[in-house]
Image: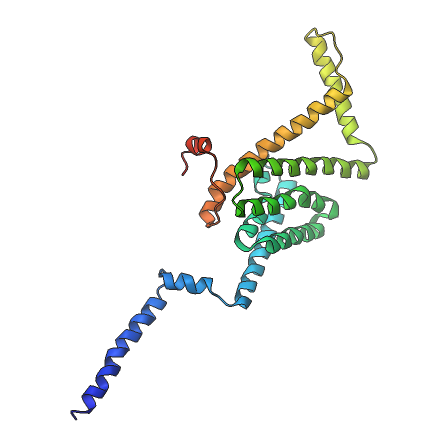
Length: 248
């Protein structure tokens, strides 16, 4: 009898120890649980990447689809490239490119290839580039500058594609109309000068780039407020922006 009690005492002492370890492992708010989630198996990680890529690609396609048939002004346009950028921040370049291609294919089925390629260039491309620059910690002026060039390229690509489909040069038609409007304004103001077509085209290109810069700046502000809450923060804005927004 005296020998049995000591033999049971180590087992009894180790039993609550195992229970305490199990309780720590089962605690959903513990650090060990978060580390175990991060250290999932490669097959589970690949499945998670695939699910998130499909979900965010569908979200981007839905935003484009709704904005095309039920336009809400420039509001939804701010979110066109964010799903691809979020994919890059979470899972890298391959997932972001796959999301952009999946959105293009889905929109090709829903709306046709001509409308889907206008989404891919520039917004799918822009999301991949912004995600890559944000993940590398690029400054705002750099990502805004490169993004503005991509948006401007997308604008000219859209005009070129529509000109091919309609069989007329829309850019030349638009600049002629702007030149006529400028000439009428000059006459009303008493200015005895006629704006040249090259000057009108230069002003139009300048306005396109200014519009692209403003658009990219607002996209950065929306991403700063949204992606921080999704635990995928972007680089911090300049000090004057932080002061204006009162945002740390």
